[in-house]
Amino acid sequence: MAVMYGVNYLNRPGKGAFISPSPVGCILHRPENPRFAQSAANFQTATHYPHFLVGKDGEIVQVSDTGQKTTHVGNANAYYIGIEISSIAARPGYEHRQDPNTTRDPLTLAQAESLRRVVDWVSSTHSIPKIGPPSLSEMTNVSGIWHGFCSHADVSLVIASPGDHEEGLTDPEFLTLGIFPSSTRHAESSMTELLRKLDRQELSPADRAKADALDKFLSKLGKKISP
Ligand SMILES: [Zn+2]
Image (tube, rainbow, N blue to C red):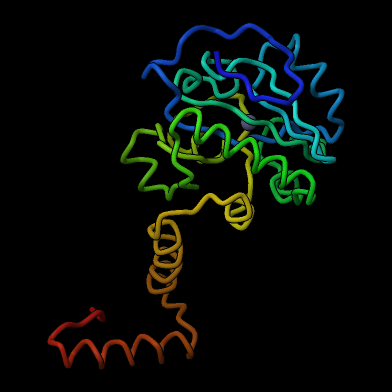
């Protein structure tokens, strides 16, 4: 039994033990509904429900015991705790898909503070390190079972969940919560961008100058980056 002290607990029964047998990681979701009370009521009966919901005014409700799995991430339920973070609704046609506006809906200050409390509690109660979100290669290397914190979108990239939505938080918001990425996430995204430019011969004069300077430096060491 794992229930956070001092928060409203709905005591919805879980769906049995985690596989490992404790949760491996924690997924951050968006319910596509800004109304906390409505989402909380919905999670008492809906087929899909998380362990926690954090509202825009900093309200926290624990829906279910984090010692049991729930139904928030399809094929990966047996590995992850789920936290829903109240957000604006998705635009028509984007419901339960990845509406970029929903993912970018900023956390309020009260929401970020409450969410940080929940993250800290989940981290210390279940020994889940505050590391995340993972890069695509990190997520692929662990077959979508990340020992840390990530967005629903990160899991959906590796473990297909047809018909499910793929949302989460921005990288700066992870930092706000005290969750730090490994260096490869940023290195990977900037390297991917550079390679894309090289592929298409799209280097700007400034980028070309940087590449030339780096080439010159590396040639002194007997190495080269240009083909
Ligand atoms: Zn989700």
